[in-house]
Length: 461
Figure 1 (cartoon, rainbow, N blue to C red):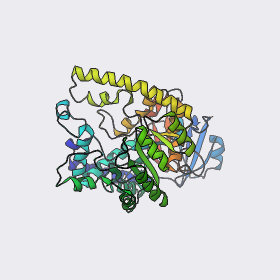
Figure 2 (spheres, rainbow, N blue to C red):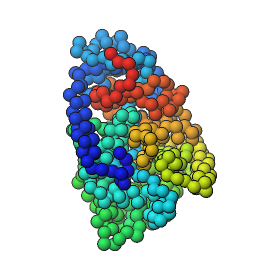
Figure 3 (cartoon, one colour):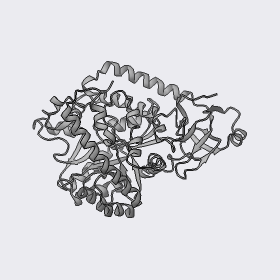
Figure 4 (cartoon, rainbow, N blue to C red):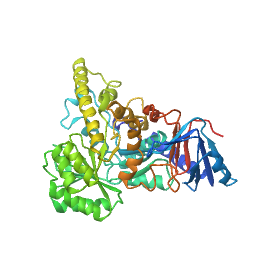
């Protein structure tokens, strides 16, 4: 199912047909009004719990929240009731940083050692040079898997071809297939030489243009934004080098100005202090990763209202988890990876504590683009919850990072992020208490998007 090397178009045609049918069947099944009842409703914004709880939904939106007795009295006579029993109801989860059209398979060590461009880039190149249709079908499957794990909204930040994520978004919005709400970034804006080096010069430009805008000056930066706008993107994604070579301060400022002129937010991949400072000075909307941000930079971000989008992808031994089930890893490599995991853990614990103390606004995203043996894409994305917990983030802060905070960062706080009247009927439910055990979010039992029932593994009437 996953991975460029094992992908066959024929079964994906069948998958696409099934998704098409499922999307239409779900859309046709939506009643005029639905009443969802549960033992508890957790509000991530306040931490308060309403018990017992009910949510009245009409035409895909929440119209009232209250006790079951209150809402049953005001519900239309034709209302369908869904009783979730002793479950905890929550707003739909938001993955603020993902890559639905990429599913990287880590190669064997012997092969990896021969690759100049590394483990990630080689599979990325395979994705770029294959059929856009095939890639889109794979993205449709991964989107459905994210939705089934409770991610009702995702922000797709590049690695999707020219228009893969915008096309997927539009198909979902039209009800042709089932998937989360998608904010699409189109092609990443990068400096020349980022990600990929030393390609065949006859083919390099044509290949890279399908995935990136490579810019070297202010005018190219502005034009990259404008060309992306032709495909109706929702957000502009930029990657900055840590050394400030390529996209420097003036170019980054020009990109941000052009995007903001079109009322689009700017998300910037920045890990080193130099890149982070360039992004801050340009007044971007979110800094993705931000691993090496200083306390002073976190304060500047807080004062400017710039979000930090935390991506705990490689925390808690992630790389070992995705490699060891499918490839032979030498004892030497295992020992080196274990040592690296320990060093990373110490840094991430310190990173989270500094974030919490700084007061900077933060969200969280899985940054998932990897094939995770034994897990669907949604299950793989959901591993970010315990990784944040292991780094010392309290459960309520984790929940806010993937609901209320992410909604604000995306500019969708009036649509999603909380269970309130007037917002989209995006709901999930778990059996236990996610504040006591955040890994409950890895076992979402009920999913509703736009008032449409996607999944219900709980008791219902």
